[in-house]
Length: 155
Image 1 (cartoon, rainbow, N blue to C red):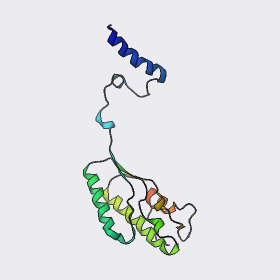
Image 2: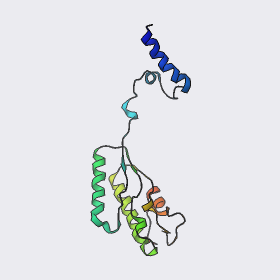
Image 3: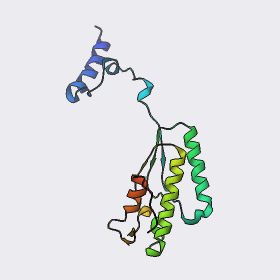
Image 4: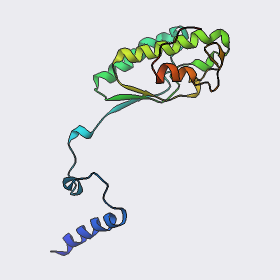
């Protein structure tokens, strides 16, 4: 064995001895060959959609256009980073029906796209009422409509 090959082997052996070889790696992966493309995935990250009440600025159509573009790209899923709607812009019990409408429209547009989605909550997604009562966390409509996909009827 020549000196260069010896050093290469030692260079790989030391990290393996210290940290081990990750479970599930087969011999071809340990030699640097990549796994088949089936393990790769792609996703889109949407943040600060801020779907608003009354479709101001034609936000619904803009959202649909963005989703259609992502669908053409063949992503595996979309991750929403929060501020999906503008729920906290309209505090008070008199606006609860508008918050429900925003969340319902948002969910409907996402569902129509046919793309699997995962949602996280942002500060603008919170609302201080839930089903006619004071909300405990402010996350209740987010949880009920986006996380569970449940349709909400106006209180």
